[in-house]
Amino acid sequence: MTHQFDTLAIHAGTAPDPATGARQVPIYQTTAYVFRDADHAAKLFNLQEVGYIYSRLTNPTISALANRVCALEGGAGAICCSSGHAAQIMALFPLMAPGRNVVASTRLYGGTIQQFSNTIRKFGWSAKFVDFDDPKAIEAAIDGDTRAIFCETICNPGGAISDLDAIARVADMAGLPLIVDNTTATPYLCRPIEHGATLVVHSATKYLTGNGTVTGGIVVDSGKFNWSASDKFPSLSAPEPAYHGMVFHPTLGGMAFTFHSIAIGLRDLGMTMNPQGAHYTLMGIETLSLRMQRHVENAKMVAEWLEKDPRVEKVTYPGLASNPYHALARKITPNGAGALFTVAVKGGYEACVKLVDSVKLFSHVANLGDTRSLIIHPASTTHRQLSEDAQVAAGAAANVIRLSIGIEDVRDIIADLDQALTAATQ
Ligand SMILES: *Cc1c(COP(=O)(O)O)cnc(C)c1O
Image 1 (cartoon, rainbow, N blue to C red):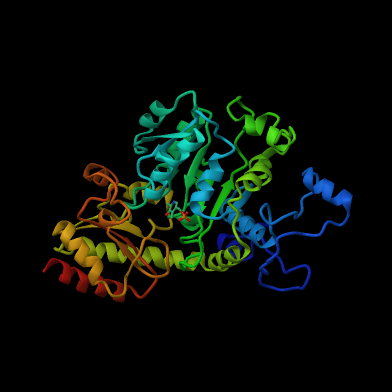
Image 2 (image 1 turned 90 degrees about the horizontal axis):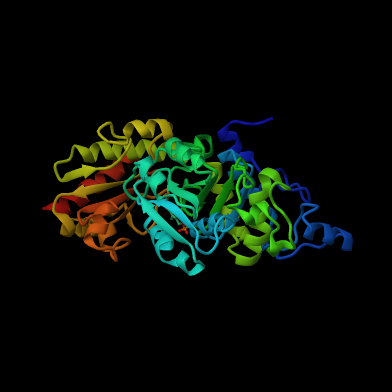
């Protein structure tokens, strides 16, 4: 029997512990697992039987989390990683090779732009950044070496919404997988696989855990992509030398990507989540729906209040009727347009710096998706290294602050912004 989303958030991927009957998922703080006998061990190593070998690969607490997020996203399989950034590398790893590229949106989390611009070049991979509001631009950027298309559902920091259906059509036509970073939306607001995504990546650090306690990442595979339709994905469709010549697809069908990611990705890259972190994220997900409802409710009220304020130049929240992404938000994120947006403050850089120094309830931190309301001035922090033009292009001009609206009483959130705006613009 399949359950509704709110039920899956509490029950999916977990059953009472078979060893003790423990109702909550135990933290299996163990590195290794005893084999029943030599034959059992051989079968596990041959992927003929599913079981636990060593916690760099799989662990019962971490598997429970992978299965839960997989159920919430409507995927076929999932793996957990040590961080959102690790999840991005793990998503690309089976698809890419030296000389290959990923076509990515210009509106990505700053850390991802950095990872894709410079660090992946060390692997011989590269990224081509284009405006994902324009499907023709994506199409034009795809070449014979492209192996993936990458975007975010709700883009950080400006809250732009990606038209996943249109982007998936372009990927489909080119025979390429679409990878969607769904961190800022969560599966409560959007399930990218229903819009044509092949892989969904998460920073579990943010809303999934929800309270700023964990660094973690997750990759969910839809299981729908035909890796054998072309010769572009030999790690999955041809004998894999890294696993004694095993052919993952079509042998393992919709689980090919997931098994490759465990058997080779986690085994050799070692970007593994820890069981304690997985436990916190499982606990967080139990209240995901309730939190996201309050996050979007509060964000809408704060954005509406800010939009009318004479000390404010502009608010980018796609939940506002005045926002250019409003119609798209209703289609892609029907349960709400997230809780992350930017505000352009009159008085420029000076006023913004004063604003972040004057808030009392908001925390001035480089994070988002916490129960607490968070604030940051990108131009003096996360986007500091960029040129002025690049800051403007990223939606992080000198007069812009980013808000991640928490689930406190909205009257207190607004009162804090009110007093800080007064201090900043006097
Ligand atoms: C934070 C974040 C990441 C990176 O995740 P970490 O867990 O910090 O590695 C990736 N994408 C988005 C949209 C994020 O907000």
